[in-house]
Length: 91
Figure 1 (tube, helix red, strand yellow):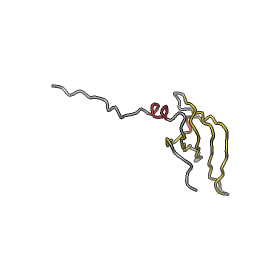
Figure 2 (cartoon, one colour):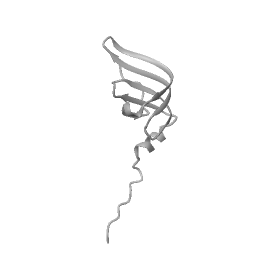
Figure 3 (cartoon, one colour):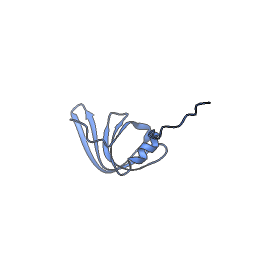
Figure 4 (cartoon, helix red, strand yellow):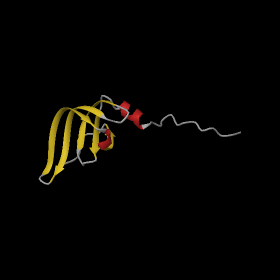
């Protein structure tokens, strides 16, 4: 009898995981070393994202710069890592 592979029901595809994060806080690390924390409103197949209640953290030679934004559109090509439920990074 041949073994059939049954997909693991707990396995999520990346877009399914992002879809589960809509309405939740998410911590995003960008390619340019910026870090963004905000509430995910939506995304598309290219992982372009719309976030609200956003805090942007940027390391500069003078120290960490923090910028607050009401809403932002992120280009999915510039995202390195996402942490669902993530909070503000440590100082």
